[in-house]
Image 1 (tube, rainbow, N blue to C red):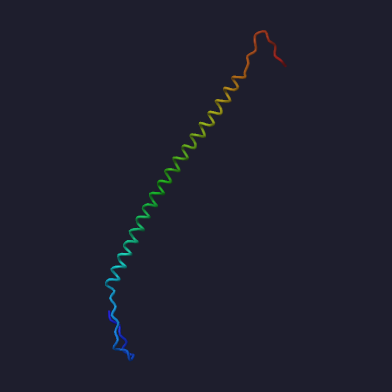
Image 2 (cartoon, helix red, strand yellow):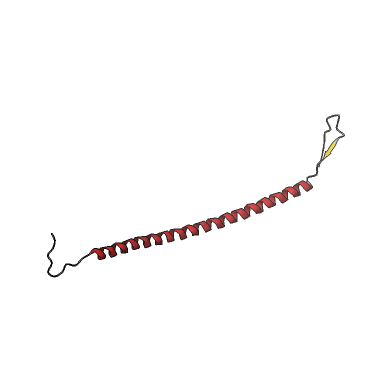
Length: 96
């Protein structure tokens, strides 16, 4: 491209602009940013599905461990009741 100013006394000075190399560089940078953006978007999607599956995994194991703790507490209570439960002998009278 050639720009010149015919209306001034410096009209003989012309400026030549070459956008060929600049536009190729800009196109390369835009392509690299676009590729990086797509890569990050795919990685973020993969991370989201990984977090979602980990959340399901953690929730299931939390529920299982809670049930195990409640069951263990119930069994301990039953064993302690059985340990302190005494059967009266045939000739014994109740204490009350």
